Image (cartoon, rainbow, N blue to C red):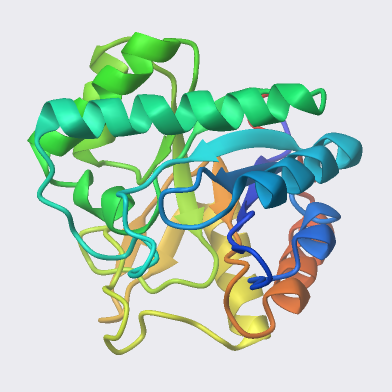
Length: 255
């Protein structure tokens, strides 16, 4: 039986001008895939070019982290966008980041929605279809990173798009497999040992303990390590070490 393997991803390039969020350089030494902002919720062209170049130098795969056009809310507020508008917004973001990535020797190799858009297309059929339509219009070979069991996952598979099932190292789960909303009890974990233990359990046992204590089955191809939380780099390094110690191979889902 083959040993377990997983991809590690993190959200990068989320600064703007002189304001910086997280430590992209440090996280690029840990992760195997980088979800790089596309300018709609965070990121500016010069900063995104720097982040893409750093990812290329580190041998980390680049993904377009598409979002609602919501800088003030950091893309964490729902936008009731018309389907055609949302499809166009996603196409625009993929194209913009791909142009920047190609200028430094890389390219966009997958797509991961951010924040409220990510959570919305778990259950919102119309917006999920709009995101899938964007990938079909740009490049059907681009994988979509999304929550297992989501509407987006089902629609993408039906359309012939590869789906990468994602787990979260430091986020609480509800009993239905969705993420506990930010601001609610147990939504965000901060204890490094707990984060490591639950991540190893997700990857090796295909299950996670929900905030209500129930055990939820999950099968994931990639683990998200948030870069904008306190102690993010230390958590990321500890998770990578714990997975390696558990016999898990860390490798991009694209290899």
